[in-house]
Length: 471
Image (tube, rainbow, N blue to C red):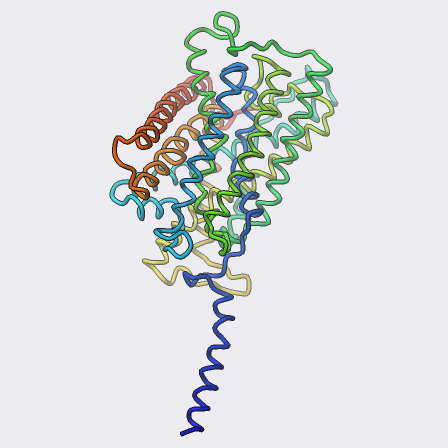
């Protein structure tokens, strides 16, 4: 009896000794242990936020002017910071430490709101991710073409015909994305986001430095308190449309809430993921807003109401040509990472649904873990993005549409509604009224900027020839 008791005790101790190792390998949901920190989350945020949107801010300032433009940048930053804090609390249901995890934004909405909200959120999120991939493909190709154009201007003079066909560059970017898209999942992209964040700082700093140099050396463009002037720069209808389109461009520059839950799902715990995410959001938004103010204000001061839609490819800067080349190369590298940041959640959603219906589709072959379905589906996705980018190469209008689609529903509406449901805020109370007023005002901005951006695309289509777009 004693022998059996000792044997049983020893067996129990042996089994107990294995538990820390198992728990050390897995999180509370049985998945591979997450290792993300506030620094990796901040890198993801900067990668998602400082993207092609920063390049259009000088143009946006030119449409809005010193007063409205500066106030708009600060207001969008404040709204994003506040609502993303609300959204971070929705990663877990119930308790912020032990509650059930939501792996995607759509799951968070379904868990907290249910009903039609989940369908509407899924539509908005994936439509925006889809569109953002197109937008980043367009932007990266424009920057790649600008490198050759810059070299041409340097060697042949500023009056030379150095126009470039962007279609070839779009296809080249697509080929690169086919390769990177074969990475298995979002958790393995931390290193790509860190590289992309470094690239963001690099080209943003160069844009700020070149704008400052232009201001010091001159000549500078004409600036006004209200931006472009009716009867001088634009007519009254153009002023209205471009003002609303500029709001969409600013909204796009802050539209990172779309991947916040996915970023939060990479964080280790403890501490609680929502606490880490709030710190990362504060650091990320503060950093990017500083860059946005510098890029927008200095770019506007340098080129005035004639600021181009893309500050680094509109060729307000010709020299030093090698620095302009380097900045555009940084944009291309950065957008390689950003494309993956927005496409990986789409990959995960589709592959998860297929795996649930057809378990054999997840089978991997060889040491490299080749999965036939993943290879075919992801390659096809990138091919479609590439084709659509070739067919719709309208930089500012596309950014305005994407910003308007993402800003109100994903950055404001759902976080506000989930907060009201979680905290059971009484209907028509002061807090309820303030939150709903914020949501309604942002809705009006979204509708106006979307309409203006669609109008911009329609105007561009009047003179557009497919596959022959030149920068």
